[in-house]
Amino acid sequence: MDLAKIMPYSVKPVILTFIGNYLPGYKAGGILRSIVNTVEHLSDDFDYKIITRDRDIGDNKPYDGIKTHQWQCMGKAKVYYLPPRECTVKTISDLISNTKHDVLYLNSFFEPFTVKALLKRKISRTSCTQVIVAPRGEFAWASLKLKFPKKLIFILAAKVLGLYKNVLWHASSNIEASDIIKIMRINKDAIRIALDLPNKINEEDSQTSAFKPPLDNEGLRVVFLSRISREKNLDFALKVLSQVKGKVVFDIYGPAEDPIYWKECQGLIGSLPPNVKAAYFGPVHPDQVSHIFKRYDLCFFPSGGENYGHVIAESLMAGTPVLISDKTPWRNLSEEGLGWDIDLKQINIFIDIIEHIGSLTQSEILKNRAIVKAKILERLQNSAALAANRQLFESALLH
Image 1 (cartoon, rainbow, N blue to C red):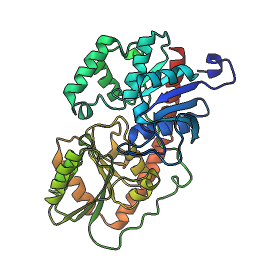
Image 2: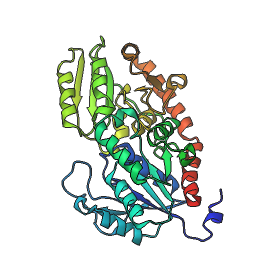
Image 3: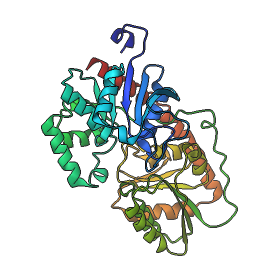
């Protein structure tokens, strides 16, 4: 599709984007990373204007160095930061009305920004239908079941009000598209499938990882890096490791955003056998993620559901194979030598895989890392995902 025919003027189409948290924040995880990567890949075709909160998840003060209530450059996007107390329907309505845009892009189904933006559309009875809603995996059962009664009430109320009527839905996979159809009871023609875009591959990423095995003999080095919330399944990882016989060092990174769940995990950590040593290192800045993954033999991430799984891509780009569930778009990994995607009901297979990796020599581990690096670069350099994301916005311009 030729954008010049759609928008016959020199100015690029403007994608007005709402997201709960954006750069310089990082604790929001995959949703934030998805938008950052989209901007990086598609800024030559579209102008992105992003409205977000002025602080990271869980923080009680604004980011250093940013200004509120005005547009400013952040990477390749222009960003408008709002204090939480000012994220009202009126403020959001005024920003939408006063910001020239061609497509309204709303990220997260349950995010208050999304709800308030759609309420504005409903109240003002605007005829504009160029609205994209990206649920970002929130309809996957692992996520939906958390606080399910409240979510169900909201979904039913939204349907009665027609809040999501005539929007275009962005699904990151066929699995997510099925979830959207099941929950919202909509026609599949209202959905566009576009896989989330990975980090842009730079020269350093294309080189072989300079992995250096540890000098000690503490055992297999395994890492979990993600938000610590129930749907990410850290407790499952700990239960698996409690049954592994070989020596394992298990390091955990990420913000503990659910205190009750984290307390449960701490109890499991305290009951691990002597051959498994677990430690928690807190949140990680995105700049450090690749360096961290390069220290480990395996990324163990048995998430209950991901609409993409940026942490999986980042681990593989660092040359570290992954052991994950079959609830993500990353499937058939063993066929490509990238790792394993296993049914969560088959806990013994998780145990056997970890035991197997623990039995490998350092030369075998290094050989496997080289295979992972080569194969993931082949997969991520596929242009189909980029074309699908471009078409997502192009189709909204014609919607």
